[in-house]
Image 1 (tube, one colour):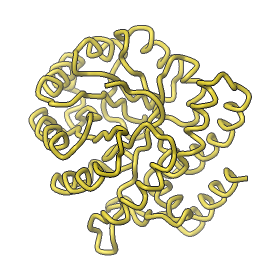
Image 2 (cartoon, helix red, strand yellow):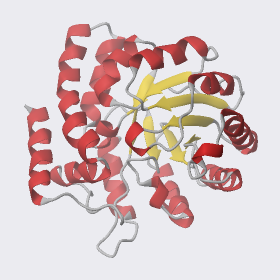
Image 3 (tube, helix red, strand yellow):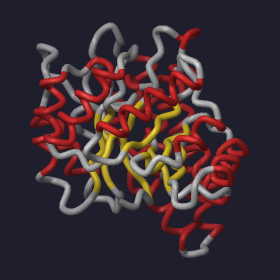
Length: 293
């Protein structure tokens, strides 16, 4: 499997009772897949993966698989125990995931040494029927850091094919590109750093902004691939405020508010996360409108 291009980490909508809104998700997915995305990622940070029940994961993956038309479907399957991560990974594969995105466990932070994390990821990769992508979680949400040396060692595992690096540190990302095995896919997780990351050797990105503005993210990637640097920079300037004012500032609630602005299925996050205030929603609406100009 070749990971390359722009992936959208899809939001997970809920109905008024707080239950999974599969119909709304499929409507969102159709919108996303109208752009030249390489694929979708379910149950990551933007998809509120830590709040999604295991039976809900299977339902949503099964409902999404038929929409993909040859594009890749990734599922977040990180859990606190190795046992649970393997179980969720196998269930995701059976429901149609092409690969899994695995965040590190975090509760026993002080005891999760590089050796413990290496053993965890090795066991998950050994037990997974589909390829594994490491997930370096965004700094505000991170309990455990995957250090560069650990990622480089794990890149040698035949079933660990890439990493989503959400640090926003382009120099560190370039180090991963240099030190990891040839063919190991380094994907940037910060839309504001997309163009710089591509220049540093990233093969694409899994971008929160792409969950509601996929076309402009894909256009940056396309223009960069075609050597149209000036146009890629112009599009990058459109994406930077969307990342700053929607994704970085408000997280899940901001992405869902942006989907609401577009007439798609956003709605409330699952508690304990809270929706935006009216004033903050107005700020998201202004950011989305500004990116269209």
